Image (cartoon, rainbow, N blue to C red):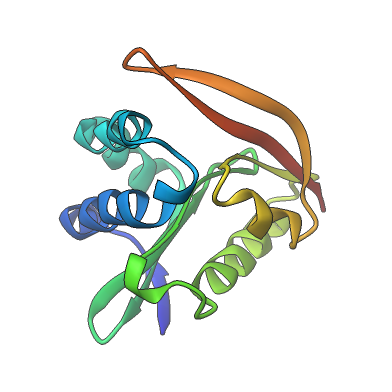
Length: 153
């Protein structure tokens, strides 16, 4: 597995990974209507392009395929962290997170924050994050719960 900075040309593969992972992995924690509302974010092309341009946005590759991605903004907010549905539990999220945390430290961030899904919450807890609050988000008229989390560096 290799980590590299994402480019806009990666977006079709990133989008597929995003949607398929949510549908196949998060379905244990979210209902079909919640998953459809969440995955609809794939259509906001400007948001994705802005994230690649403005954030420290990494992709993990294996055999020339993207198997994960993650991003961190300038203030230490971890925006994305997703691993391909067929590559779960192989250390990919851990490797991405370690690199993102190193980037936060190099930018003198005092903490890393994120909004973690129910599915991802245990991953972040295992890495020293704490839950700050439970969020009740309304997306396309559907309530989706996630958790504001932080880790002091």
